[in-house]
Amino acid sequence: MKRVLVTGAGGFIGHHLVSYLKKKGEWVRGADLKYPEYEPSAADDFALLDLRRWENCLKATDGIDEVYALAADMGGMGFISAHHAEILRNNSLINIHTIDAARENGAKRYLYTSSACVYPEYRQTDPNVTPLKEEDAYPAQPQDAYGWEKLVTEHLCIHYREDYGLETRIVRFHNIFGPLGTWDGGREKAPAALCRKVSLARLNGQSEIEIWGDGEQTRSFCYIDDCLEGIYRLMRSDYREPLNLGQDRLVTINQLADIVAAAAGVSITKKHVAGPQGVRGRNSDNTRLREVLHWEPEITLEEGLRRTYLWIDQQVRAADRRIASGSSGTLENPSSAVRRGSAS
Ligand code: NAD
Ligand code: GDC
Image (cartoon, rainbow, N blue to C red; front, side):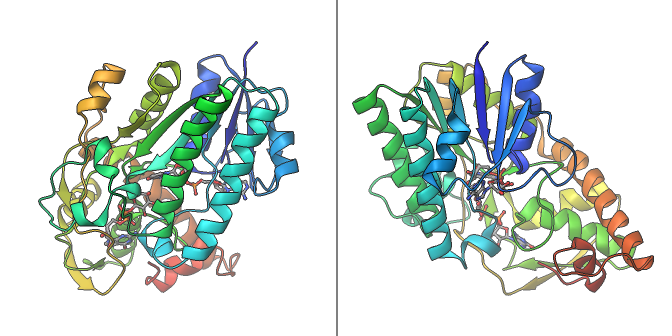
């Protein structure tokens, strides 16, 4: 039986991917620094390992045929704009050691999860941005260390295929969201942050939520179920170059907030505040995605946010009850941030 490793299996996409692969009938090992936070893993084997260390990567890839490499020190703009050295160091170590251990242990296939953050800043200065094609990554000028590291690891994958025959696949995600993802604590991305803010405002009988910047910056957002389908199709395909995986519907962050408010059944007022904004506009060109995978993401932003809001609203309410009963307390516990109402 084929044996599959998912690194980052304690995180948002990795946890969902383990469940997805189990439903496909694969034998799956998960590896991460931590277990999934919100529900148990469906993995056959779950190894708690720090994958910055070579010997741990050897343990994780022992007996493995295919690797889905998702482990990363990452987050939304609030995190990646403020931790450049940590991100570049940790993710370089994770990625160099994981792919080399996979080669050493004789793995056949390796899928690496890159990011839309590899695209150059100079192509993303206008909210009405031209959708980004895969070849637009060059001449390279990613905005943050996070994007530079992703770009270098893309090349590492290409050279490991050319020099060692490891079949590598490279996917560039465009802002993936959904239930069971980080929604508080500083690493959350805009969809989860706005769901939390709307839920919290509703809970406190308020209508105002804070948005970083003027809210006219644009992005596209892709629901987790589409992300999983795309990852699996790419791993099974014979396509070896980097491939976008995202939606190509461009929305402003103000529009995103309105869709979340509609999902919650409330009206909101927006308070625009200073905060890390990243690029001014970003969208995915899905021409190659359609050609290669004969498919593209299908779940609408409204439906994806409806499902995500429902889950985050439950988390906010559960945290609020914990606070009310006096059973929470540390800053690590989301509920303390919830009651303060100001976490970003
Ligand atoms: P996540 O933060 O939820 O999951 C990443 C996991 O990696 C975490 O569980 C974390 O504990 C683990 N990890 C970090 N350092 C580790 C280490 N030293 N050893 C072992 N595990 C370690 O992030 P995610 O959203 O699930 O992202 C998965 C992958 O997709 C990442 O590589 C990320 O860069 C990439 N990506 C995600 C998005 C997105 O929108 N979610 C966009 C672009 C790229
Ligand atoms: O964090 P993010 O979703 O990441 O932010 C999108 C936009 O939403 C930014 O302009 C940000 O200023 C704005 N925004 C407004 N209010 C808030 O409360 C908020 N919280 C957050 N987080 N943002 C807010 C991401 C990376 C990922 C990943 C993807 C790939 O960049 O952070 O790690 O690689 O890109 O698409 P974003 O889309 O800039």
